[in-house]
Length: 352
Image (cartoon, rainbow, N blue to C red; front, top):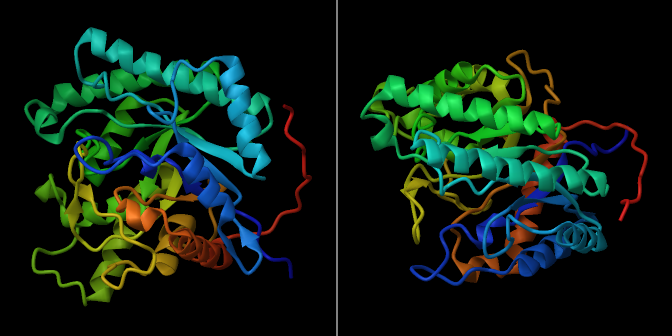
């Protein structure tokens, strides 16, 4: 029996930026994130690729074709591929003014253009472009119906732009994004968009907070008196959540959470990402990843070709230890062993 080779295993590079900066810790350079990802190895298995946030100071969203080619060459030189991209849409809220919404769509266009060219260069065989509403839950709550309509209209425009580049958009489920801050509002927003090239980006850390109803108590799934030792109740809640959101899921982050919210620097409080080995983690990472990677009958969905570890807002002291990334890779390998598959593949050299 062949060892599972899908889904491919990726590391995210934007944790070097998110929650960092003048009011927190220094940004970790892209090259450092890339090097530590490439150096990680567990029993001869390495990361297959990286997911990238097209964010300053790692990248200029207005990068030239030569810049894109240099990026492709650099990543390929480490025997890595590029998967999903994060569009820097936070300057233009999806439910903002006409000008702000136009800015949002323009940022999606720029990200899709980069993604398309990376595909042409042969270093991006799969992946989506990630977006969110760039809006706060409390602002959304001032007029839920109209604000959801605004977000959906902006997302539709973004989907139409993405279709020009043969890209799919994944809306990130996170408690700090208005209209996406609960599992029910997330589904309502996606249904309102009504485009075939949009889906859900699930992150195990963020979606755990959906169960608790943070920022949307009426959508809580776990009972108010829930205690973390009640694994049966947690399993039932995870089944409810994933059965509702799995059909939308086209991008997936493996992660851990200790049941709390956290924010550093300018980043709003959201689900706290924990290390893969954190004893306070509330998820059984490998087991619970199966709720997303398998359908309600236990069959593999194979809905995406790669999975990614997202470890935002870890201290720099932790992120610059190679052991951190080896432990993360080891966890991803276990997830693939439990919920992955094997398929023959032809190794194609990048067209650079």
